[in-house]
Length: 213
Image (cartoon, rainbow, N blue to C red; front, side, top):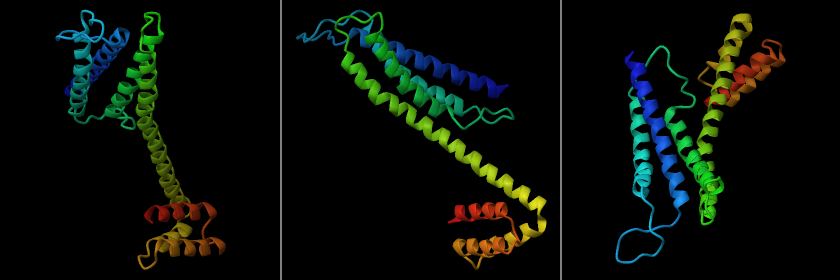
């Protein structure tokens, strides 16, 4: 129970933080350049509520960090959520991508005025969207690599079970500490050419040795 209370609290804080950041960015993009206070006025006065919008962006960032910290403190459970795409990485992607999209919607959407800073919003989108998507692509690629490694290990187990004699011949080569990996691969090739191990067994052992290089 404690696990889920902490996990859901962290998710709620993270979600509210993303909403606050995007709400503030949307309003600030609609406002554009403004200035308030001081002896000189270099632009049009800021509308009411601009300070709250700036605070929403600033405190939204800190709220996201707090939410990730709460999520991390949830501990372990038998029903753990898949860690291939962890919450800190998801928050990074959401932060940059939704900031860019909210800015674009502000200057290109129905509420945009004639003075909307379209150039600034497009520049931020070109900068932020790749920054948000790049870690996600690496995470998904890493998950694919992990699955491939698991498949190789499963194939190795299957080979050892189905062909104990040929597997023991291959393992005697792989487990010999006197040979380096390349020499072991050559020896495995000899065993394959002599028919002592199959092509599938050769590939499994070769991949295992290549990972050790």
